[in-house]
Length: 340
Image: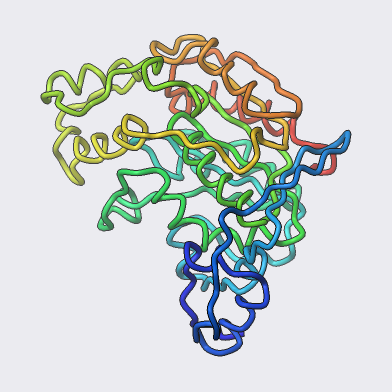
């Protein structure tokens, strides 16, 4: 198959496997003849005691994913701390950061902390691979334009991440705050396109994406003046230091765009009515906005086991390093059998 053929999922999802194969084997030439797109892609449930998975018949997605190739430089742009492993990993942790933050939430030690965090330690000591997503517009990607729509961000991430996830390596996805909805949008694409799914979903400090907009426990930032938006940020436990709002990369612009990712989010369900893997959810005891009842809404998102636990910190407990480390230890301890 050609390596440089354009991947257009919206067009190709209307083709059958033979049409897709023809497209790649002929350098991107359109399949001959008149092709009538099906009125819909039927979903057949496959239900066993261990799964509730929906498979799209006639979908060329598996062929498309196998054809995707990502160079190390592109992969490292999305995962800045990634290094090619010396051997095939035993497991992977794929992590999604919150608004206003970056992948260093999962890969960094923390300010004035002497030791690596428990995620890094677990992966180093047990042969795992830590993949922490870095959205554009921050840290090493600060010069790139930021996304303002989560589904668009997930589409951009998909061709970079999907080939890695389709390998025979079990993985877990982890998301904090807004990162939980980025995680969900990514899961939707993995499910729809036949990519290997995670063994477990771990979410913290955010309601399920299906929560109606009118019930979201925050105020949308659109139309807020500077002072009002700062006050809204404080309800999320953002602490303002002198000059941080405007110095360096414009922090206000970053926060506005990142908040828009969840303020303007429009929920659309996945191809299956529920996620076919267990969900572990955590709420922060001192969170001013997101309460236990909000995080509990993730229970309806899965047809497998659901666990809800408390974390003794505020919404941004990732910056309360002792709390973060104890939470990470709990996540590591609760990973599926065979991960450790």
